[in-house]
Length: 102
Image (tube, rainbow, N blue to C red; front, side, top):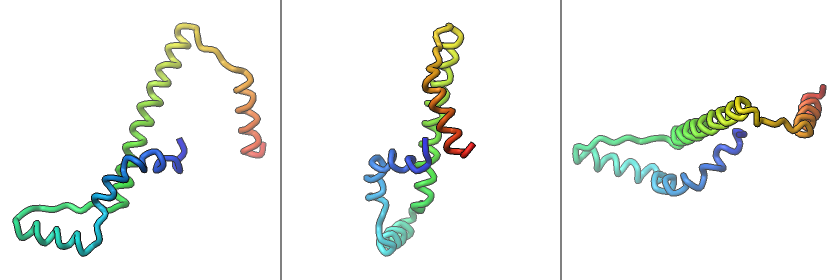
C-alpha cells in the first residue's frame, strides 16, 4: 500500500469525526472553561495526532491482511497447488530494471 493512499482510504470514515472535533479555538476554549468550572477534566487531541492514529490503524489492518495472504500462500505451497505465472514474473523483472535504471 502506498503512503499517499493511506489518507484516501480513511478520509470518508473520518470526515464525520473531523467535523465534530474541528471547532474554532474560541469555541474549544469556551468548552474547556465550562468543563473546568464544572470540575470536569478535558483532553484536546491535535489534528496531527488524529492523523497519526489513523495511520497506525491502517498499518495494523494492512499487517493483518499481509499475514493472512502469507498464510494462504504457505498453505498453497505445502499442498503443492501454488502456481507461478512466468509472464507476471517477467513483467515485474522488466519493471524493476526499468524503474531502477539497471
